[in-house]
Image (cartoon, rainbow, N blue to C red; front, side, top):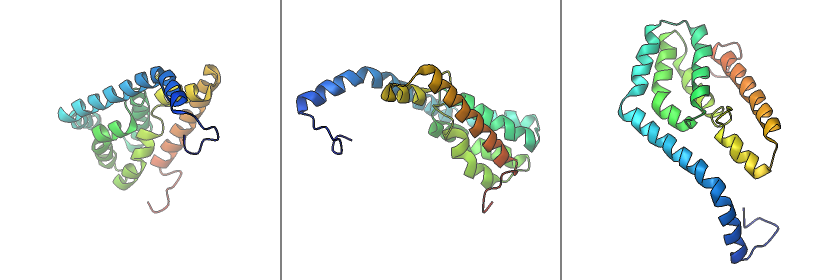
Length: 171
């Protein structure tokens, strides 16, 4: 970004710029670091498989799972990055979806969409939203309402894909 910047900065100006932004970067970086620590803890204790067995014990139909799984990952996305969710729950989500009669390939293809696209954008703990607001200098209320629209539409499209109403080519 500095190389393509129209404004050339001296080393002193760069240090000043970076020192001002560190206070905004450190909390987000620490939050992401701790989220990955939680991910490693969950993986080491095999929580994903246990939760999968628990969900399967309810014998929920595929239609219900198409609504519940993206909702769970949306809520988890407030505190866990999508990659951490995939690491912890990826195999579980695919196996639960397949056990209910769903296409496991569709579940695997939708996994990044389910876990990644809503993480960081789901208020109230929307880390990506706060980082973007800081960079853009945008209004909290407008940004939050835009994020809510994004999350609701994304959730609806995800459910439609998982139900097979909105087909994915090749699946």
